[in-house]
Image: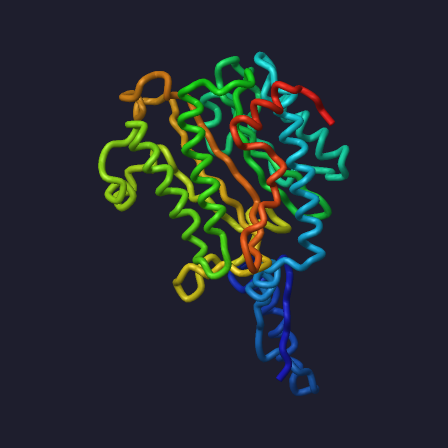
Length: 326
């Protein structure tokens, strides 16, 4: 039996109706000539799922490229921290990121850089990057380079003036702990969703302790009343695309993490200055914090590809105070 394999744009039947119609017409034309010996295809096989599974497990060569992409990206985040000054435009920090990418051989960002100062950090996909950075605000940078067709995806949040105030530090420490404990759970055999659930519980516990949420932690999680503060999940696949392909569930069950997979760990807490948050003290409003790392699943403990980008408060403040660009 003859099989016709099509890999047009990794497409399968139903993705592109116009192409589907052309394909059926081609097959009909072949069938019309069967009496003369033509053999039409008897089966269509979609390769999309098979290709996606192959992309999910990274080879040693792919991991070398991903480590390099992460290293370049970390250098860019350090450059942004060192370059940051009150009064700068968000776009000026973006320029520092792109410069560092390009001077290290990464021609483009893997996705539009997010540089959000103050309340702009509460917009998840903020890419306008046009506002001035204010002295007492935090700035959130979500940026990664593409290096030889492989992506990095790293987020760091730091104070524009180089020093966290008490309110910023209290919230930052919650997100940082969620990030670290989520990474620790990125181990072989764990379900994909579990690291996020660990990170989410840490954030909800922290929000309750800071009196930004009220109630029992289990009830808050079950009722999803945390969503105004924590609107997104903490992980996605990473590879030759920033949100890379690969099933998250197998037969309806969260798939187990296996060596060679790379995913992000990016918990975040956001407190926009809007009506929904009007009951909170002004010092909390207008703060958005996300901390994101790229994590390789191994046979043992997880490997954090983006570990070179500072995220501990003393390290961030020291880097910004030293002010030396390598």
